[in-house]
Each structure stands twice: as structure tokens, then as C-alpha cells.
Image 1 (spheres, rainbow, N blue to C red):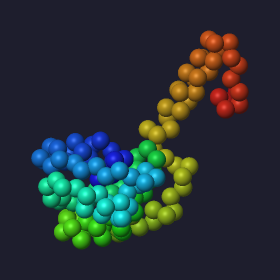
Image 2: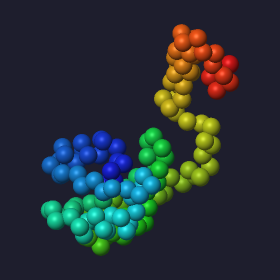
Image 3: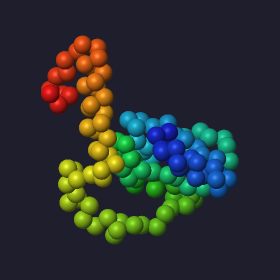
Image 4: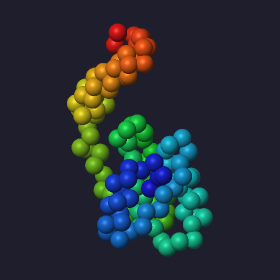
Amino acid sequence: MSDQAHSSIGDALRIIGVEPFAVPTMGHRITGPVLRTALLADAGPSHATGVAAAGTANAGIIDELAGVAAVVRDFDGLLAPSVRDRYAGIEQDDPRHRPPRKWLIAPFARRRVRRRHAAAGIRPGPACGQ
């Protein structure tokens, strides 16, 4: 898994008794060559599988999935079955439609900035909605 992987991945691995092997990333995404280099340099126990992201929760970063899968195969790791058919039509997604949990807090955060500015005697500009 990359050093950018969500903490829940490491937690899940530890629960099943597997110690996570975090690979340093280039540009916040893991690539096949970086994974291969890290695995070859590691003198630790064998590795069971690779974990790659097809869009991280916070930044939407997509790892080099084909490269990571090729390296996992080369090292006789486990690969998840394809779920490509479940994502048919995703290319039609409109970025203006996101779950409320992602944007609902924005007005609250803006109000806090306005209050902080007002308390400091600073008049907020257009970026704060005024």
C-alpha cells in the first residue's frame, strides 16, 4: 500500500494479522516501478497483496492501477476480482453533484472565518461570500 493510503486500510490489515508495508509515493500516487523497487529492497517477510486507490477519499488521486497489478502478479500476490462492470457509466458523472457530507460543512466553515475576521477587525473579501 502507498504511504498515502487511508488509515483504515492499515487498521484492517492489522486486524487480520498482516503488518502493512507502506511504500513511499511519487506525487502522492503509487506506481508499478516504485512498488517493484520497494519490494525488491525490502528484506522483510513475503507480501500477500498490493493495495491501490482508484480515487482517494480526500483528493481523488488515482494510483497507477495497471502497473501495481503487474507487480503484484510478478510477486505472486493476490489480486481482487474485476468489478469494472459495476462502474459502467461513471464517466457521465457531473462533478457538481457530490454527497452532502462533502459540502454541507462549507457554509459553517465560512461563517467561522467571517466571525474570526470580524473579531479581529478585518473585513472579509469576496472569497468569504461578502
